[in-house]
Image (cartoon, rainbow over all chains, first blue to last red; front, top):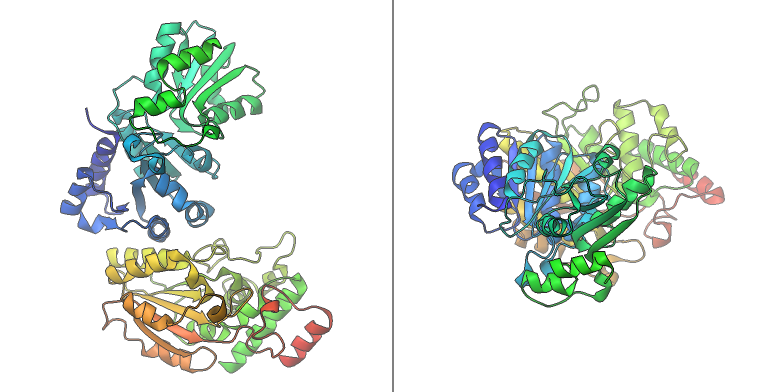
Length: 291
Length: 264
């Protein structure tokens, strides 16, 4: 089992050996996944230090000159500290830069809420032509790495910091159920468990925006439940509501995620944080049953 | 050079009067700097081939001076001069801030503080591609309050980007006040030197600026260069210069006539 980060950059490294235009920018990320770049491809590796605004601007400059750039940092910092640079320097010119953030949700659990990425989906998916991938396992991470190197799109790849068990994202628990749980990222693990216990259908959606054609997986259901380790404001559940409303699909939706009106918490350990926000399996089942 | 500067000031003034908006004073402080670059044989460019790969890159980080760059690009033949009449007009080609979909414009600007980092990225790409062109970027002095400028300053010197030249339009004014009374930028040259740049200063309103560009010996340095060009915001128009109240405004009525007369 390897992390999403290691799987992703292993594939980027293999592709970068064949394509000198691939450049990886790191904001002082200490990870062995980047060592092969430093060792074998130093001309394709740039360290900007902990300076995310400059990392994004440098990425824009390189991309304007035809480079295929990956910018790697901790998720809340590479989205929020430099959001305006992403919007102006990258998105306004439709540059094919891939922003890679590690630490989806509360996966930097012991680091505290400064390191959580629980608002990033809301702000990143509002940017035009931004493809947002919330990775759920390492295998998908490899595929997305390859896609990013050939795509002309601007991308935000959101990685979990922990090594997550491999779950076939095409898994269906009870396709005949009228109720489906939709989820993304690390939460598909809990979603599958909950679906199995309640004998609901399950469907994972790793990418945003959700397109109209994606609704075919759930447009015949009588109830949708969305599950995310992210703020309820503007996140995954909101994206589901939008695609339903915009396509006149009238299915009741129950959103389960982080109610940040409770404030940030200083609990440590992912289980404790999930419990605090009602994202552990028992709390989720209670919420679904209206208990 | 003097005549060209005068002609461009007239063009910019008329564009902004017609539009009823535009940063006239921000343009006027950097006219001679851009004339030196585009007409003094400094900036390699080809209006018939705006994306010529060996062109020198020019980035106008103070994107509010877009009318001046648009006027120059039209004059050089990147697009028809008639297009300038659509500045800030409904259905027109361009608005107040700089857009990269205009031929000859390298990069979109409007939000301050981003130009130096983007220029550094372009200069780094040139190094990696073994290309010999230069990257010039014009910064406003009050833009140097942005932290991203200093992140980029550190990055450029560390990466020995001797193909990067920053020019600071040092007109000493922000939007509302003198820089030194609002939040002191000085000692500015020393700040750049301590960040690892070759720094110098000159007048930005006469032929000295062209002389400085021609004498730059970046190839002997292995560090980037910054030129602090001392200018006057609204330079060329007595009643609009050095007065914060004219920031972002175009003159109208009697003021417009007065400005036209001064530029005759």
